[in-house]
Length: 346
Image (cartoon, rainbow, N blue to C red; front, side, top):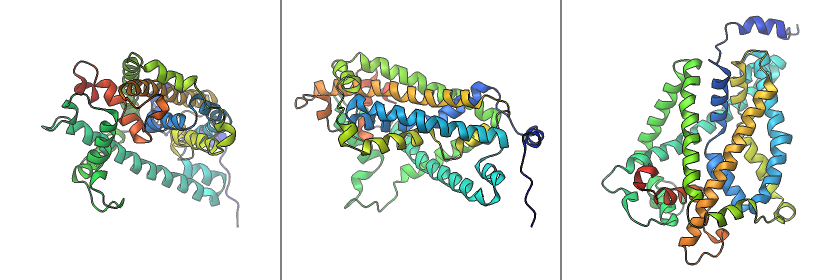
């Protein structure tokens, strides 16, 4: 048997000449940060902070970011740049028997897309439902609990599930899932340069919306108490008495940045081999965490406002929100205080 000749930097440079490139480094940043930023930033990160002692969660989160997240991200982007191919090709170039590792990561990425596409389908359902004759947001004084229940029971369809077992399809959500997959196809069908340009909107617009939500939230009554719960009133005991906080911080980094899914390796493979992989990785990872941090201010400021509206609430942590309800039960209430609130909610 003969040993396959390993790929070298010189041979890869020759191969890379035909590789499709990002239109600019900014396009790469928008695409990479856009794939990292998502529901995990505006929903799961605030939920973990809420569950694990407020600002105390930042300690394991920061350690996981700098000791695990950024090093692995550097590795993935650098390998993609050097070998000029995706995860299967990268691991296959290291050793033919490692191709299964690349296939496994791609499979995980596919499962993640199917999960996120359904979340987007639910959001589409809620958006178009707001234009119907029974617009839920047309009501006055909608509470956070009512908003969360509306999303979970009416939009997702959990209100019709018996004994906790999902036994039927929700026709609207099936249709919106098809619409979501169609949009995903159109975003990637015209090549990398067009995909990069599309990310200027798909990443830029959510950032604008985030700052709008933040501006609205911090000016609500009681917002200060929510912000104190977020960054000042920390329960440091969770770091020693709740070991799960450390594993959850690491899983949040993996989930939020999108490492080990083959995504960043593929993105890196479309960069020139001499691009600064370490610098690019730091920009992507830190931008992702900043988005989470800022989203936390908006969520907790809104929770402070909701606490002032609940006669039984003495502290923000007394509110019954968790998981989806932390975002879908808080921000709609805050946006509803604006003139034309139902349009802002859309």
